[in-house]
Length: 178
Image (cartoon, rainbow, N blue to C red; front, side, top):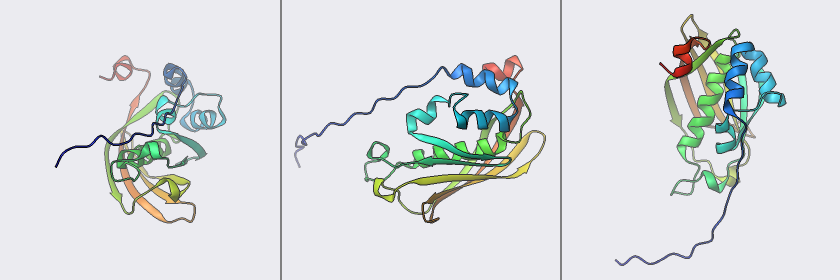
Protein backbone atom coordinates (compact mmCIF):
# COMPACT_ATOMS: atom_id res chain seq x y z
CA UNK A 1 0.00 0.00 0.00
CA UNK A 2 1.50 3.30 -1.01
CA UNK A 3 1.36 6.30 1.25
CA UNK A 4 -0.59 9.25 -0.10
CA UNK A 5 -0.09 12.77 1.07
CA UNK A 6 -3.23 13.74 3.00
CA UNK A 7 -4.79 17.13 2.50
CA UNK A 8 -3.90 19.33 5.47
CA UNK A 9 -6.20 21.86 7.05
CA UNK A 10 -3.86 23.68 9.48
CA UNK A 11 -5.04 25.07 12.77
CA UNK A 12 -3.08 26.99 15.38
CA UNK A 13 -3.23 27.85 19.05
CA UNK A 14 -1.27 30.52 20.90
CA UNK A 15 -0.62 30.52 24.63
CA UNK A 16 1.09 32.74 27.13
CA UNK A 17 1.98 32.42 30.79
CA UNK A 18 3.40 34.29 33.75
CA UNK A 19 6.79 33.72 35.36
CA UNK A 20 6.36 30.40 37.26
CA UNK A 21 8.70 31.59 40.02
CA UNK A 22 5.92 33.94 41.20
CA UNK A 23 3.91 30.82 42.04
CA UNK A 24 6.88 29.13 43.74
CA UNK A 25 7.45 32.19 45.94
CA UNK A 26 3.75 32.44 46.84
CA UNK A 27 3.75 28.85 48.16
CA UNK A 28 6.47 29.81 50.66
CA UNK A 29 4.38 32.64 52.13
CA UNK A 30 0.73 31.55 51.84
CA UNK A 31 -1.25 28.73 53.43
CA UNK A 32 -2.34 26.22 50.79
CA UNK A 33 -5.98 27.31 50.92
CA UNK A 34 -5.04 30.99 50.62
CA UNK A 35 -2.62 30.24 47.78
CA UNK A 36 -5.28 28.35 45.79
CA UNK A 37 -7.90 31.01 46.41
CA UNK A 38 -5.41 33.67 45.23
CA UNK A 39 -4.74 31.61 42.11
CA UNK A 40 -8.48 31.23 41.48
CA UNK A 41 -9.14 34.97 41.83
CA UNK A 42 -6.10 35.90 39.71
CA UNK A 43 -3.95 37.62 42.33
CA UNK A 44 -1.41 34.78 41.95
CA UNK A 45 -0.88 33.56 38.38
CA UNK A 46 -1.63 29.93 37.60
CA UNK A 47 1.26 27.60 36.83
CA UNK A 48 2.09 27.41 33.09
CA UNK A 49 0.65 23.89 32.70
CA UNK A 50 -2.87 25.29 33.09
CA UNK A 51 -2.35 27.55 30.06
CA UNK A 52 -0.63 24.80 28.10
CA UNK A 53 -3.39 22.23 28.58
CA UNK A 54 -6.22 24.77 28.79
CA UNK A 55 -7.92 24.12 32.11
CA UNK A 56 -8.83 26.40 35.00
CA UNK A 57 -9.36 26.31 38.76
CA UNK A 58 -13.03 27.04 39.51
CA UNK A 59 -13.69 25.91 43.09
CA UNK A 60 -11.52 25.74 46.21
CA UNK A 61 -12.34 24.66 49.75
CA UNK A 62 -10.42 22.83 52.47
CA UNK A 63 -9.75 19.36 51.07
CA UNK A 64 -11.76 19.93 47.89
CA UNK A 65 -10.85 21.44 44.51
CA UNK A 66 -12.51 21.59 41.08
CA UNK A 67 -10.85 22.27 37.73
CA UNK A 68 -12.80 22.70 34.51
CA UNK A 69 -11.75 22.03 30.94
CA UNK A 70 -13.48 22.47 27.61
CA UNK A 71 -12.32 19.49 25.50
CA UNK A 72 -11.00 20.68 22.16
CA UNK A 73 -9.51 19.04 19.07
CA UNK A 74 -6.02 20.16 20.11
CA UNK A 75 -6.43 17.66 23.01
CA UNK A 76 -7.06 14.77 20.58
CA UNK A 77 -5.08 11.57 20.13
CA UNK A 78 -5.02 9.70 16.78
CA UNK A 79 -8.35 7.99 17.62
CA UNK A 80 -10.16 11.35 17.69
CA UNK A 81 -10.71 11.43 21.45
CA UNK A 82 -9.12 13.50 24.20
CA UNK A 83 -5.68 12.06 24.99
CA UNK A 84 -5.59 10.20 28.30
CA UNK A 85 -2.66 12.35 29.37
CA UNK A 86 -4.88 15.44 29.29
CA UNK A 87 -7.43 13.76 31.55
CA UNK A 88 -4.60 12.51 33.77
CA UNK A 89 -3.14 16.03 34.05
CA UNK A 90 -6.46 17.56 35.12
CA UNK A 91 -7.16 14.81 37.68
CA UNK A 92 -3.60 14.80 39.05
CA UNK A 93 -3.73 18.59 39.41
CA UNK A 94 -7.10 18.46 41.16
CA UNK A 95 -5.95 15.74 43.56
CA UNK A 96 -2.69 17.46 44.49
CA UNK A 97 -4.47 20.80 44.94
CA UNK A 98 -7.08 19.15 47.21
CA UNK A 99 -4.16 18.09 49.40
CA UNK A 100 -2.40 21.44 49.02
CA UNK A 101 -5.51 23.23 50.31
CA UNK A 102 -4.78 21.72 53.75
CA UNK A 103 -1.08 22.68 54.00
CA UNK A 104 0.45 25.49 56.05
CA UNK A 105 2.60 28.18 54.42
CA UNK A 106 5.99 26.92 53.28
CA UNK A 107 4.87 23.37 52.66
CA UNK A 108 4.45 21.87 49.20
CA UNK A 109 3.84 18.47 47.68
CA UNK A 110 4.51 16.30 44.71
CA UNK A 111 2.79 13.26 43.25
CA UNK A 112 4.21 9.91 44.34
CA UNK A 113 1.74 7.69 42.52
CA UNK A 114 -1.53 7.91 40.60
CA UNK A 115 -3.92 5.12 39.69
CA UNK A 116 -6.42 6.16 37.01
CA UNK A 117 -9.33 4.35 35.40
CA UNK A 118 -10.66 5.66 32.08
CA UNK A 119 -14.32 4.75 31.73
CA UNK A 120 -15.48 6.39 28.48
CA UNK A 121 -13.99 8.55 25.72
CA UNK A 122 -14.07 12.33 25.87
CA UNK A 123 -14.51 14.37 22.69
CA UNK A 124 -14.94 18.08 22.01
CA UNK A 125 -18.70 17.56 21.66
CA UNK A 126 -18.78 16.00 25.17
CA UNK A 127 -18.76 19.57 26.45
CA UNK A 128 -17.47 21.07 29.68
CA UNK A 129 -15.71 18.59 31.96
CA UNK A 130 -15.08 18.95 35.69
CA UNK A 131 -12.14 17.41 37.52
CA UNK A 132 -13.42 17.22 41.11
CA UNK A 133 -11.05 16.09 43.86
CA UNK A 134 -11.42 15.39 47.56
CA UNK A 135 -8.85 14.65 50.25
CA UNK A 136 -9.19 11.10 51.58
CA UNK A 137 -6.28 10.98 54.09
CA UNK A 138 -3.50 13.30 55.22
CA UNK A 139 -0.58 12.19 57.33
CA UNK A 140 2.65 13.96 58.25
CA UNK A 141 4.54 13.10 55.04
CA UNK A 142 1.97 11.61 52.68
CA UNK A 143 -1.62 12.24 51.67
CA UNK A 144 -4.19 10.55 49.46
CA UNK A 145 -6.89 12.21 47.36
CA UNK A 146 -9.46 10.96 44.87
CA UNK A 147 -10.44 12.77 41.69
CA UNK A 148 -13.30 12.27 39.23
CA UNK A 149 -13.74 13.56 35.68
CA UNK A 150 -17.43 14.36 35.22
CA UNK A 151 -19.50 15.89 32.44
CA UNK A 152 -22.14 18.60 33.01
CA UNK A 153 -24.73 15.90 33.86
CA UNK A 154 -22.48 14.25 36.45
CA UNK A 155 -21.62 11.24 34.25
CA UNK A 156 -18.26 9.73 35.29
CA UNK A 157 -15.58 9.55 32.55
CA UNK A 158 -12.46 8.79 34.62
CA UNK A 159 -11.55 8.13 38.25
CA UNK A 160 -8.14 8.55 39.91
CA UNK A 161 -6.55 8.06 43.30
CA UNK A 162 -3.35 9.98 43.97
CA UNK A 163 -0.74 9.60 46.70
CA UNK A 164 1.29 12.74 47.41
CA UNK A 165 4.56 13.42 49.24
CA UNK A 166 4.45 16.51 51.48
CA UNK A 167 7.71 18.45 51.96
CA UNK A 168 9.11 21.74 53.25
CA UNK A 169 9.28 24.05 50.21
CA UNK A 170 11.57 26.50 52.03
CA UNK A 171 14.52 24.08 52.23
CA UNK A 172 17.15 24.41 49.51
CA UNK A 173 17.01 20.70 48.64
CA UNK A 174 13.27 20.91 48.03
CA UNK A 175 13.72 23.95 45.77
CA UNK A 176 16.39 22.23 43.74
CA UNK A 177 14.36 19.04 43.43
CA UNK A 178 16.79 17.00 45.53
